[in-house]
Each structure stands twice: as structure tokens, then as C-alpha cells.
Image 1 (spheres, rainbow, N blue to C red):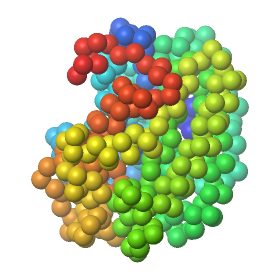
Image 2 (image 1 turned 180 degrees about the horizontal axis):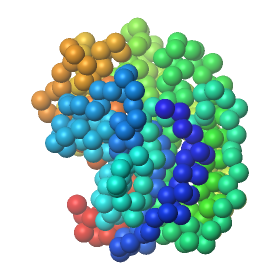
Image 3 (image 1 turned 60 degrees about the vertical axis):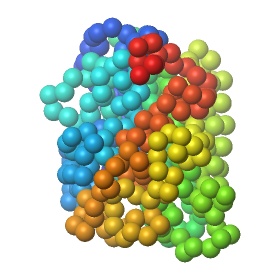
Length: 355
């Protein structure tokens, strides 16, 4: 799946043009959420059109085991976007490809496996969106738009093809530019509350850790891969500079950077306090291969020969790439209710904020 954020911005226009927003606004006036992204946010788009392949397994248990059924989410249960919607007093976002679904409170365009840039055109540029329909602008002004997390797969596919860090770093400017172009599209359309997340410290992810031949100089004090985390930090630094520039161009909009990198490191540092098994913070709950990471790229979670742990809530990683529901809940609290949304542009209804 390689739908670009700019293309999805046009889909966003179509949904806004055809649907109506009903119901009461949350405490900060937000009546809907619109989300662009990849598997970190996908609530069921990929499973509607996925051909046989590595993502086919998310259609079946053990995916969704904590939720009670598979939903197309790459987890045992809910995602950060679900907890954010709950805390804002809104229903879960329906996937754009869901049939006979209501989009009154927003829609989720995220697709597992999606890239920021079109893989057939690494110089993918923004497409012009000249729509200024008053009704669309009105709806967006009472909505929250998430532009990402996106871009991680651009890097993942390159790294998994054995490209060097130096080679993959060349993708950073294009990925960041595409993310910002997508944000500009929705801002042009009338959005005035936009959140743009950064990348995770991928050197702490079991899938990456399992690829590396152990060597003491490769790891930092938290047991994460130095070069992978440094790479993610470079992406985030460039993205943050671009977000700052975007704020200057749109002074009347509230544009926030969601710091997935440092919030995840805080989660790892305080794993025990947050209810996780400290010995399992770098091990997949669902997978094969055992060892330090319980991860094997040739036998992914859900495939024959894999098994899920008995208590997913004790694990940070669900399948070696994505997190458990418990970890996503913790991340949502750290970011949207904590110090990792910069600046804090959300206010939560009291009854939900105390949940």
C-alpha cells in the first residue's frame, strides 16, 4: 500500500463534502478526527483490500485477541488513535474503506504498509488542492487532523532490503517534505488543528534488534541499537524544523509535533511502573524464534508456528513491529495528556481525562 498523504488529502475533501457532522463537540470544540497514516493508525483499511501476503495475518486471531475479535488493527487490541478518540468523547474512527459506516465524527485514511512517498516516484511532489468550499472549511475548523505517523515504512522497506544507514538517510528530505506538503493541503482546506507525529526510536523495536548481529558497541545504555536510533532522531529533527516553519506560515492554526521518540523511551524507562514486565520490553508477545526478541522475519505473528503470550498487557511489543494495546494506551497518555505534544493544543472533557 503506497497511498501518499497528499492523495489522501483529496479523499478527505471528498468525505467532508459528502458527509455531515452531527453530535456535540468535545470539551475543546472538536467534533471529528481525520487521520492519515500507516499501520500505527490503521483501524481496518488494509484488510478491506489486502492481497495474500504478510499483512494477511492481521485478519485473524491472535490479532485483536484483547479486543475480542480481529478488526484490522495491527495489535492485540486498540491503538493510540482509539484512545485519543475516547478521551475526546468521540466514537472510534471508522476506516475509509468500511462499507455502510458513518463518517459523522471523522474518518481514518491510514493504511498499514503505506509510505509517505510514492515508491515509484521518489521525487513525489505535492498536488494542488484549490478547493475552498465553505462547508468543508467549517467542518475542518471543528476537527482535529492527524498527519501520520507516516514515513516509517519508507525507511523500513529500504533497511529491510539491506540498504545502509547512509543510503537511507538520503530519503529523509523527501519524506519530510511529503509529510509537510500533506499538512499544507489540509491547512489550505481549512484545518486549524493539526498534529504531526515523529518517528519512533526504531533501534528499540524487536524487529530491528533481531536483524543485528550482537556487538556491545552497537547498543546504548537502554539496549537499543545506536545507529538506528540516531537515524530516527535525524528524521525527527528535520521534521521538527519543518513543523516550526509551517507554524510561521499558518500563524492562526494550532500545529503540534507529537514526540513519539522520547515518549517511547520514557515508556521503556518506566516500564515496571507502567505495569509492563521489564524483562519483556524488547520481546514480541506474538511471534516465533524465541531468544531475546521472539521474532523471526520469515515467520510473522499469526503465521503457522507462531504463538501469542498469555498476558499481552505485560508486553510493550505485540508482534515485533507494532505495540500492544497496553503500550498504545500508555503512549497515548504520555503524548496527549503529558509533555510530548508540543505545544499542547488539546483540552479533554474532565470525565474522559480522568479515565
